[in-house]
Length: 395
Image (cartoon, rainbow, N blue to C red; front, side, top):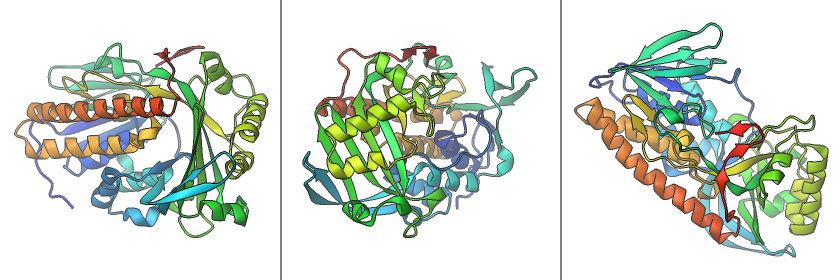
């Protein structure tokens, strides 16, 4: 591992948000010998029923280098891309990739980070910048204040603190949603499992795209029978449609996403009807075989700056890029690797943060534009995107 070095002008770091973006930063900066503390507003360790992720180079390198985890042992290989026609016929091309799950990455990062550094169920209510520090206010009725040399804002696309660094930069709804589902491998009929084995499968229809692939099971399990099938279906929806999709069976509006197990019966019925009408038969069967589909709005978000004094934006709190780029986790890992390198190599914190911001702004902007271009090619873009507000939600 790395030799602990002295980083000029910095000893303590506070990370706001304990999902992947915050964890990448916390693990990397702890390796520099810095006193790192993470605050995550959600309570308890999350389960691993979330979506799959294409394993990209920065994530793989981070897991291997910082977490001493062989990414090949917690990911599922694919050898080909498979393309379906509407009648169910398919063709494929050779393309090797590794597929991983959110949970496998999360577990690797949490296992590496000293548990005493991670505080879940503790919401950061405010950040107060001072000349050479940032005060982090934690808790509501009874709160505490923690002074740190550097504050990293990593609380995701719905960041509560983005405006301290980049005012008026709320993400925008792109005009379509991603329905998602996971199915345990043991629940897939053998003949259907064989259709998708070793394949990253796609179907491009009119104003829609469906893709699927196998991912690890619980927090990285890849043994035969323990994996899951992960599918994503991009469907256009206007603002009213988004409201319906993200309102649960009890009438509670979630705004921009709907967790597993909460889909309203009528919305679920419409999803199944759409699958029977539009999808090739193998893909339709995946949708029909999913007990708890979930959904998220597709957003575009960019910032003009990622640094204000000793506060940094990172991960989706800075740039929200579309899932077609397969780059959200990759971008967060690269944010952390780049900051680690800059602090280790440059003579002062100011020089390091300036170099880091320049690098990450360039890459984030490129990914932001690439995602919009991909949506355009697929015919998914909303011609009149609007700020992601309404129905009681504001980013």
